[in-house]
Image (cartoon, rainbow, N blue to C red; front, side, top):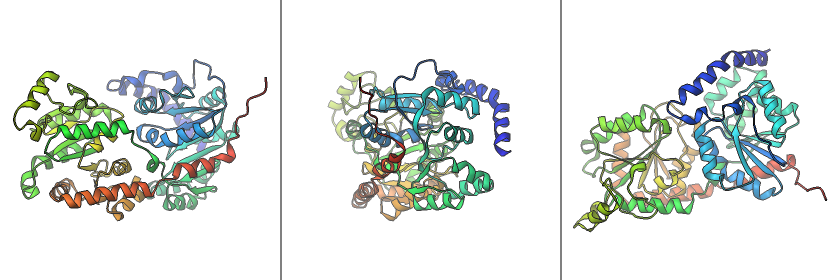
Length: 460
């Protein structure tokens, strides 16, 4: 009965869901592309299989899926891989990561109505499916089981808050998870909460995000970008969410009375959602701070270190020749807005210290592992329920410090930036923390193996 009510509700809101695509397309035109895929309509033949299917809803899940996708392609050379998404930014990230791989295809997952799910499954006929982290859609999961597609919840996490909400559905929740072939959890805490719901087949395989490797060219770009700031320290504020930037900018504007004499660093501000780039730029202007956009740099940081808000590259070169320019650096704005996609590793590599957003307000936090992997120490706010175990482990390892609010963040940042030895030690702890927890990909692929038959082509 609950599933029927759920389906009827989806049917009722489907016109609103399509209107929402048009509404969101005002800022992100990609929402009006490939709309038919959201209705289970795929115009092209899927091509020869067999197919493995990984669903990664948006940017974070797609990045986390990268080591898994690469490992599956290596382990099963006769298979092709379908990567599905819900957001244009997730699809764009997938194209950046795997666009050169002919065995990877991408599309949107259909809305969670039974007949749309059937169209999708009939079209691709995946041999096995993997849903990343928290993406549990009842009709999709039930449809896969009815179609004989073994489905796994991979890199699975279930926060205490989500557990309490899910537990209200009692046996209905357990029945939904029973349609999975297995649940591969990030931590023992996540696994315990799944088991408390009555879920069978739960294994702890670890967090795939620890296995993400920053592209060497991005790290090198980060080092060049760091050089462009000159002698100033660089504080990154990464994956910030709506409401947080105003708090950060207000605290940054009051740096001098809060920081005990430590010079104010340059702020490398990277909002979580690209549709907010212009909004955040306006917030910076209203705070009375000077702004440079990553997208407006006159020369690519991959090629030249001394980029600046100048008319052209020749002016930048002239500026670099003037006395004192090497110390000051070519980037002298108060804030560099990271308005690009796929360059987060570069931003972390360019920073002396990183604050991870989504944590000043009760939004659950964001992934701190990518910063630690390149040796950047981390500050994080009080709200990290979506990444609780990773955050606590990073704090225990000496890679991360928790702050209570934006003002405390400024004080903690000043204390670290004013103590080079402590900052360097924290960076080493960050690298060690990231290295210690690797291996989830190997364990995940091993857990999936019984459901995936090695492909042997038919003899001609």
